[in-house]
Amino acid sequence: VKDPADTLVFVEVKSAYGDAAGDPAFWVNAKKQRILWKLAEKYVALNGYGNSPCRFDVAAVIMNNGESRVTHFVDAFRL
Image (cartoon, rainbow, N blue to C red; front, side, top):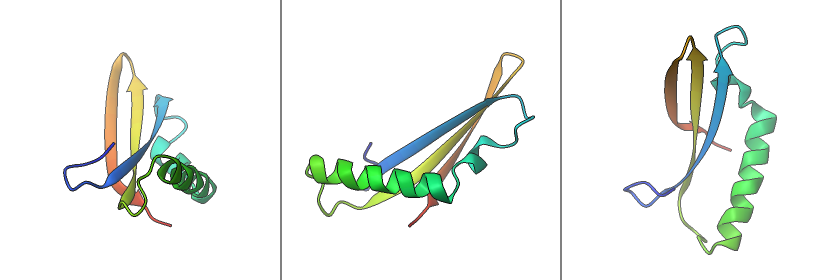
């Protein structure tokens, strides 16, 4: 996805049923961030985005009793 500033945005979505396992946003740890970075590098190279600015967002979804709460962390991490 590209934002209005023409930045290529990669969004990792994590979801959980209830709060027992904690905030799903915290599941995007350093190891997962490195994996996402490598995948993004390949995507950029294969699709001709070259020097386009990129950012990584995280969307955390918690579902509880038929309702959902979504928290969007813009520019959640950098490598």
